[in-house]
Length: 253
Image 1: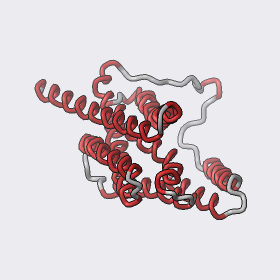
Image 2 (image 1 turned 120 degrees about the horizontal axis):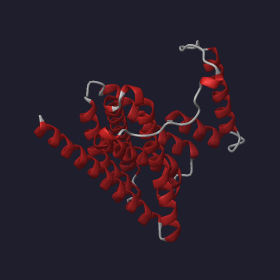
Image 3 (image 1 turned 180 degrees about the vertical axis):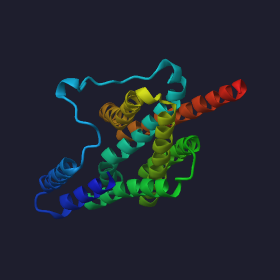
Image 4 (image 1 turned 90 degrees about the horizontal axis):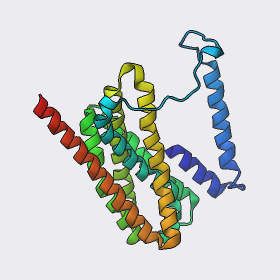
C-alpha cells in the first residue's frame, strides 16, 4: 500500500501523463500477479464446478461474539486511521502546508506504511492481546499529532504522527487478527475472518465519507477534529471491552 502511493506520486509528478501512467503501472502489476497465480501449483484436490459453493459465508458463532467485539472494533479504528491518512493526506498537505508536489504526498503516505512494516518486523515476539492493546493505546496520540500537525502547519509533527499511527495500526491489525484466528472454530474460521475483514473495509471507507460530508456542511478542520474524537472514543471502547472481558474470564478461573 505504501509503495503504491509512492510510485503513483512519483509518476503523477514527473511523468507527462499524470492521470494515465499510475494506472498503467497498476494494470501491469495486476497482469504480472495474474501470471504468477496461474503458474502456481494447486494445493487441493480438483473439484467439479457443481460441488463448489459460491455463496458467501459470513457470520460469528454466538459463543464467541463477546471475544470478537474487541478485535473487530480495534481493526475498524486502525483502518479508519489508515483510510483517513491515505485518502486525505495529499490534499491536506496542499491546504495546510502549501506542499503541491504529488511525489511528496506519496512519500508521506509511504512513510506511514513503512513504519507499520518496521513495527511488525520488530515486535513479532509480542503476544496477540498485548499487540492489540498497544496498538489501541498508540492510536490516540497518533491522532492528536496528526490533527495538531495540520492545525499548526507543521510537517515534522505530521511525519511523527504518521510514524506513530503506522505502528499503532500495524499492532492493532496484527494482534486483533491473531485473536480472531485463535477464537474461531476450525470449521467456521473462514466466515469468522470474513466478518472481521468487513470491519477492516468499513473502517477504511465510512469515516472518510463522513469527513467529506461534514466538510461540505461545515469546515474541513471541524471534520478532522470530529474524526479524531470519534476514532479515539472507539479505541477507548475497545480497550474497555477487552479489559472487562479479561476480568470476567479471570474471575471464572
